[in-house]
Image (cartoon, rainbow, N blue to C red; front, side, top):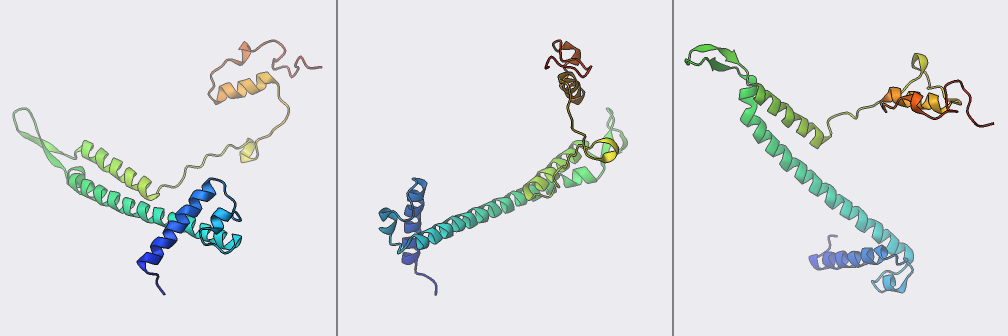
Length: 179
């Protein structure tokens, strides 16, 4: 049976107070939480979870409405430049003589940017996956290495430092000053 507006307002007020107390670190079995009308620790805990889930649902609904509005805006912008991006337009020389037809490349670039924005907004792009592999696509071998070997690997990866600039005792002969 649906609750009346007054009952829903009362529940919302109680939940807001419960959340405020929990944010302050008040335990569920504290008398201040019981004073809100909760009969037990578990009832208060369950209501807290309901309040958080309800808030999450509200946020998801707001995000969905925002996404819809942005998609509509992108639709309008896309329709405004689509023809220029897809239909060749006449090209004239300085004397206003027709020399050919071309697609407006700036309009094409704008369309691509709008499409990219839509893909990001709607989560359409797959995440980029990068993977480091060792010899023959296998695991990367890990073992003892000298500081110079590590610095050489770092420089190959893009650090740019010269491994020969490191102090004595860290050369690539496999020996260090440690004994």
